Amino acid sequence: MQVQEELKKFLFENGVADVGFTCVDDGPFGEKSYAMSIVVKLSDAVIDEISDEPTHSYFHHYRTVNAFIDRT
Image (cartoon, rainbow, N blue to C red; front, top):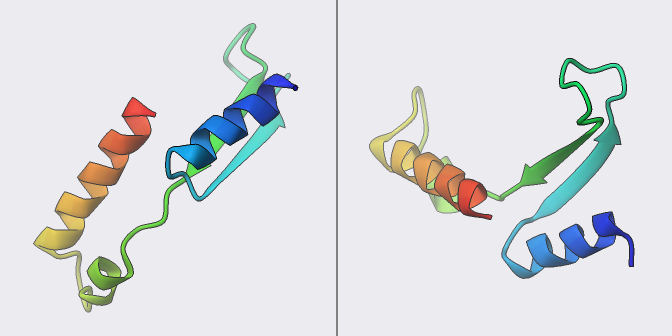
């Protein structure tokens, strides 16, 4: 199994909604020529609360999701 497929399997098993990979050979990161994007779905209930500006619930949820991504 390729490394990308192993990573996708691991991420999906841990609650990630989607993941993407790309080659960035001309990027500013030296020898690291690949990038990965991780998508985590936010709560519909929290998003539905937003009308004009982000709510306290959204701020907390956003930080929690980012912490989840950092741990994953």
